[in-house]
Length: 424
Image 1 (cartoon, one colour):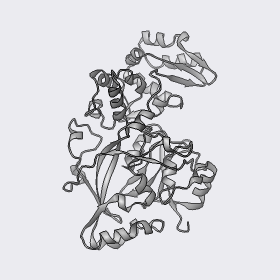
Image 2: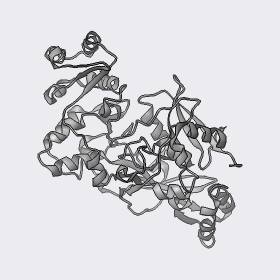
Image 3: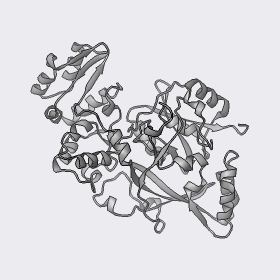
Image 4: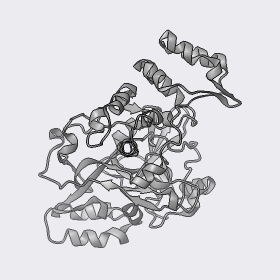
């Protein structure tokens, strides 16, 4: 899937003192979400790491995880994948099959020296350094390697090269590479009708940052598709995004504590009547987690923003999503950075763990202080997040450490939490 990112991973980066750059009103499109039934309860020690590869994983119902008990009650959840609707996938596809490497602010000598540091095969380095194939622009230099040249890149050279290319937004597919969450290309494409040529090329061109498998040559692999159907299958496979699906278990002796946790002053009218009805007769009472979230979150969770029906040029990002967590209707004024910053400073205050429902967690770079991602805490280290502005990034639930691991590939992360003031 595309997540740093991915379409993911790249959210807007914001200065530390100006907490937010937010986006606009939302029109969402429902995702294709597989919801296998909850089975018998499992324990945390019985469930495999969801990122571990298994050829049969997608064909078997995911085993549920039973969380520890907390003020929220107890959660039972599993991980599944959702994929973008066809119209959004097609609208976001590359307009060209040409690979583009842009080196911003570098002259020809600097680019050649960098290529020389990659330990490339001599013939490949010679071909890439041929000036007559370069596009020289005021902002930098662009190279357009062929698919054959891409295949000649050693794996270690590719990781270093693509990590460097991710510095410039002109290199969209390096900045926001596809994340292959299963750790195996063939497992990732299981169930999609693609050729052996597509599978082999994707395997060859995938690379790792840390323990995460990435792929950044989407335009090139689409050029291998023999039919429009296969092209769509490739795009659909890359649009897959992991999310958690959960239900809440509340025992009679923890009913009051759970009602207090899920019924914050900002959302009590939304959730308290329903929660009281659910807990009235059964022990333990249980309900889908979705029903206990604020109205706006219930509306957009597991959906995609459709830019075709957007009322403005802004795309909702992580900061827009997290700050609007308790707002029944998203605040349009938060589209403007100055007003968004003012809103954050007026309505939120820093807090330390333990986190509570709706706390906004900012991921800041320890070197620059910039806040490059934010998400809203739900319970049991599960967060509500949108990992990037791209239409291919849905609103999902993920474990906090999983979100952090994605951004740690490119940043040195520090997490700070802000809680909405009771007076607002």
